[in-house]
Image 1 (cartoon, rainbow, N blue to C red):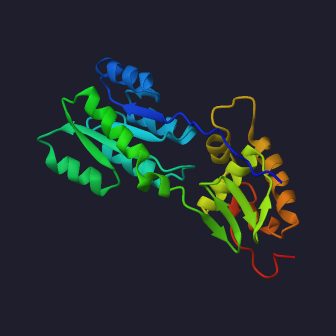
Image 2 (cartoon, one colour):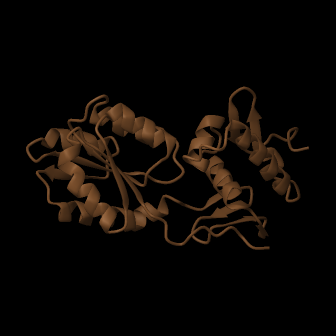
Image 3 (cartoon, helix red, strand yellow):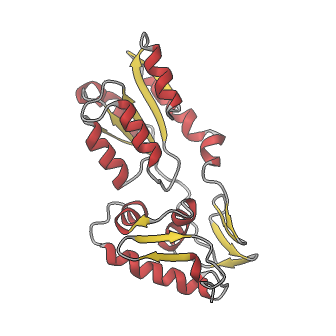
Length: 243
């Protein structure tokens, strides 16, 4: 059997949150020019909604954002289950040392002093996205010998390769990343399918059924549990639930 293999060149998505959109147009343009996919949102609340709808790889947050404060945005992102690690960079005046320290303590990965040079931002972004610590956040997932290897992008059950389509792979990986937590159908739809407007929450149910069927032979179908009226959870079943 052949394991699911995604495209090797994944365009990294970058979201910039800054009320002065005109001032960062050059930054967006340059990031896109060097191979990223960058866009700007002026409002913190709208940015949080965008992150929840489709998680970017990196978010650049101006300290004086509106709608939500930078701290609220950082906390909201860090508390939201994501399909991959999301890097966070703070933009702040060099004199605002206390703000920078607070942001870093709450989960930001780096800061850049304003006014900034576009070259510096691109260098910081590139360093974060290629760092070994970023890649290690997509760590191997293992539950009772059901293993996802994110480096090889394959799933094995007790050493045997499991053949999954791309959507099934992403669905299983996301559930296993948040083992023991109940995930809403709407959240699974946003994180696994992204902005595909042609699918609805019923699509989640259909693909969960398919995934369970694939996992039946190696004996893991009961690990994907339905939480009625809410969504799904990945967890080791009790002795009575395994049958």
